[in-house]
Image (cartoon, rainbow, N blue to C red; front, side, top):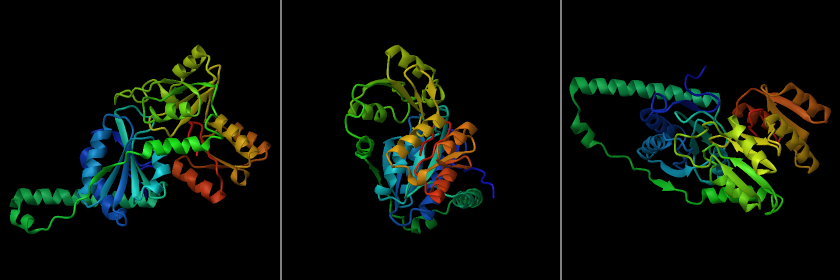
Length: 350
């Protein structure tokens, strides 16, 4: 079955038009409440900096709380934070409101299971079926009410369901920054380095510069003032021209660019030359192998990756495999091959 709405990374569209409108978000939350949120009856919601994020979060929260599910609001956070922290949030699932590298007028909803992983195609097909049934039922109810008038007595005799509440997680961002600091060899790993960071006016606008500062770097942050409309606008991982020029002008050691929700990363060297996802993957593979941290000496990429990269990795003695395009397929192949490293040309690194 081909899903009409859900792709490999959730559902996406133009904000305030179906399916990225408030009514769809509310209905989706109602369906997920009965399908997924049956154990903890808690769900986490994060969002990037798009102006439509508040509307979609409010609609999702209304749908969940009306169905007795408590919402843990994470605020403006990057997608990698949501996938990393979800297992420790004591929730049945998480949702990330974002359209990734797309312009501000688009938005989307990514669904993440309680372990921090993506759901299956079969799961999305089940959701779409339930949403179709719900929409048809709502249409029939509306028609009946028009023909017969509202039956107020019937409504008054019903007992209301318990309501969920909305809880704001005030600690998740600082906890995530600490997680990233802990990955570094030491807390002054970047001391003496000047780094330019292009935040894409997105979800990493505070976290990324702060993390590098905490690790001792001299940070020049650009495109770090989101206003709801400027996310990814001529900046970030898709538009590295400004980053390259800033690195050269500031005589920085290197530059880093992310996209709006922080699931893509591109580097530029001290001369402003772009280091794409394939090049970064090769570097990481050799670094992790040297430090005996590359599981099964195996690297995963996708069908979009450079043919030369695969040949290079194999010549260097790595086991190299390609998956279909889509993070869920990549993760599945990583599990199958028991690998600890994956990357894509566009800058997705797992």
